[in-house]
Image (cartoon, rainbow, N blue to C red; front, side, top):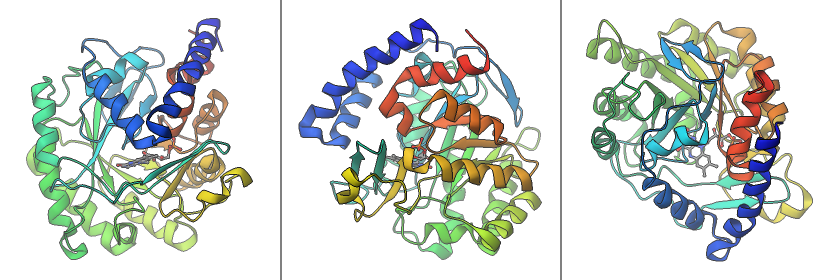
Length: 350
Ligand SMILES: Cc1cc2nc3c(=O)[nH]c(=O)nc-3n(C[C@H](O)[C@H](O)[C@H](O)COP(=O)(O)O)c2cc1C
């Protein structure tokens, strides 16, 4: 780690102590305050061009992105390039605006460097995100905010599972003009039944419809569709899911979402183990890594590696496992922008 990145890390650690105590330690209120602050940040920063790569026809200035869920409504979309990210995945949004689950619904497992969340896709809806991005000057491919933007779409809670495809299709139509790629979220544990869409039959129908619609919207240059998987998918189920993905026209896979397992929670955080929701961060590191290794062995498609990347070394291991691009959520909360830089420095000293 360079001296300046080390200093950035130390500075963030100092800030973090106060940040984590703000609002009586209510993680969601801290998050909301941070997003409101960043929403006011001026646009104009270019993504740090270190280690550029072209994946699915998209030119990424670097390989470290912001994971979905942190800026669901894109309110701070123009801020992410400033932190050194090479792309940002906004969302998850649903067709219908929805409040999400009752609060509290996000918990910091401090000793374990993890987060348990059951947000439940709280968001302002796909049309509102489209309008927010339009107002910021974003159009697909124009990198108006300095970096490519992915948009994650999910199923509205009130939509029956049988009608899920139509729900995703409506979001795709609304958002395709603004997204450099669309991520299909079938792996959140916090919308009842959502993960059943990862099963081979359901997934084949959903991905077929979405990639078909993407081609219908723009035959010459269909928006690339990525699919995001849960780390709890194993054995035959995983093999069948990957087979469907390999037979589809999706552009790549994002692995992984949060886990339902509580493995890796340290004794000091055991009181949180019974909180419903998905676990992320350090407790997920080994599971996400081995998932990406298994995935990379069974698909030729590009993989975005996400889950428990808490240090530059974790990032390097995720690349070694076969990921072309990385995404950060919990590591960014605990380590700040120094993690984004530190990972890039390991690949190519700045
Ligand atoms: C509070 C919170 C909200 C999240 N919301 C979403 C979401 O809306 N869509 C999604 O695909 N993933 C969501 N995630 C999952 C992250 O994008 C990521 O896949 C997961 O946390 C593992 O990465 P990490 O260990 O770096 O956090 C969320 C994670 C957290 C902690």
